[in-house]
Image 1: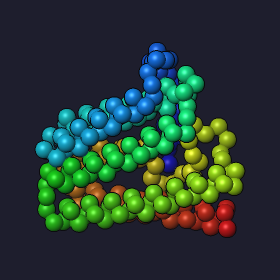
Image 2: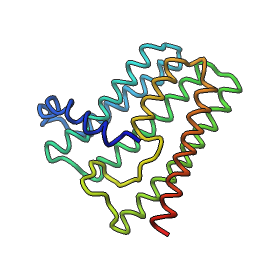
Image 3: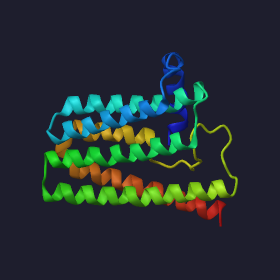
Image 4: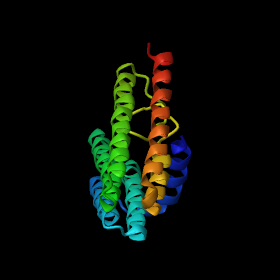
Length: 200
């Protein structure tokens, strides 16, 4: 929901350092984001709350650098955007799994399953829609992302923030996962309605 505004602010803050990284392959930053994200998941799995939160935030900061470095130094590519998205999905699945490993109750596993199922449906709701928009040449102007996707209630900014809450309050996993799942389904409905209006 706030991705566009946050992206502009983030790019302004990151730009001085990103300009110095002209020799850094953007994919290497993407891989560092993956590694720190997986370390976050491991720390969550062993119940290390603050270190897991720190690694989560570091992972997301690195994730914000790769695209900016690519744009500033003429290294953008469709593969880079695709690679970044795939690795992001690995992290977004690994962290909640790590949290449940730290507290392996049947209730926690149930809510994890439901939440990951909502991610699966949400992915279909925006990836296939993005492909249709590209097919119809309905790409948004001045977009800084590889593909065009109509925004919804839950985007990258909201997900990062909510994962911080997950990591800080692991004992409240069923409630937090349940709330997030409901918000994801609202986002899916928003995109379906947008698609009904614009691409019938």
